[in-house]
Image 1: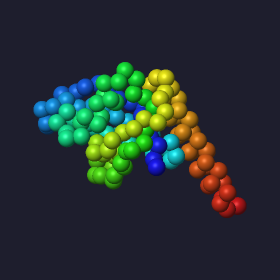
Image 2 (image 1 turned 180 degrees about the vertical axis):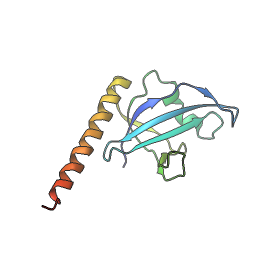
Image 3 (image 1 turned 135 degrees about the vertical axis):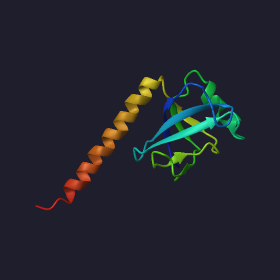
Image 4 (image 1 turned 90 degrees about the horizontal axis):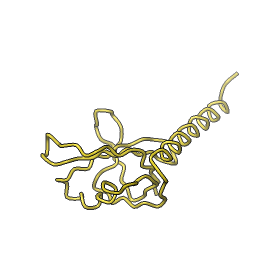
Length: 123
């Protein structure tokens, strides 16, 4: 099961497309270091499942129950669908702590990649 770290939640923004309000969430996969985004809009049928993350004073932590899909986004990367039901497994103290953990995961992935590359480097 994927464990995703919530690293950012944008403030409420009026949607020009739906007429509702939307929030954007940024995630980091704790196992791979991959990053994903989710956009949740008040007009979506699954909006109530996301309200705890939207209105929580501190939503930062590790979540499961999220679905990652490949989509043609303008950034050409996978996204976490808003059809999922996020479930927090570990709460962090703050967004700052989430940022520190995000950087540690990314640095760990880079060092593992470098180690793997060095194992197969030809002399």
